[in-house]
Length: 208
Image 1 (cartoon, rainbow, N blue to C red):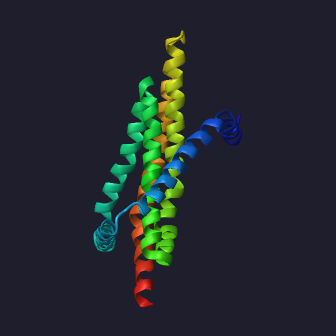
Image 2 (cartoon, helix red, strand yellow; image 1 turned 180 degrees about the horizontal axis):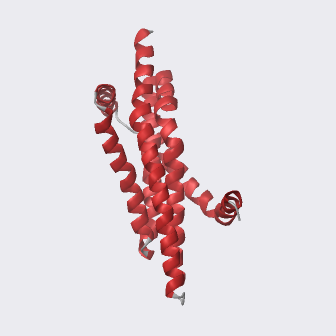
Image 3 (cartoon, one colour; image 1 turned 90 degrees about the horizontal axis):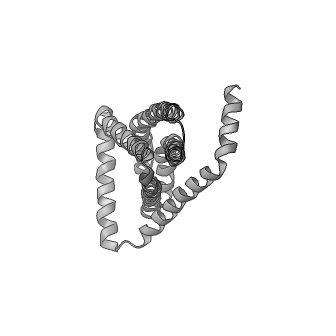
């Protein structure tokens, strides 16, 4: 079976779970975006000032410092989901992490669009969207692998042979390592491309 067939089989076997995980993430995004409207005006002003300060730091600080923070943030989530997948009772927390990450994304995008209008849309498309095209699928796939392994543990307690469970663990761990590499690439993209795009958008806005 070639790679294309393996991917096709994987998607076919896990389509239902992918839909559930995607729905949970999207629900987080929606609630995050709605949460922006619940902020009091003074809180919105404080948050706008904080974001402006963050923009300044991103465009003036060395990319290496920002990159380390992003690498740590991405890998921390991957490792947390991986560890939770190795415990049966940790499965619900995977859904919580997924929803929370969606909420943060929705809140960030919602606030940028509400506070900066058209400029907020361009900031979203040029600075948030590119790394998200990697980070979000990596999070969804990591969550799926973790949940599937957790389900393997449930079946394992009902009579699976130890070597079968060991093989599943090795496969699971190998998949997470590959996904962690993709998460690192997402951090690289976010650490180097996003600040560059941010400078372009802000420079264009100041020139108007």
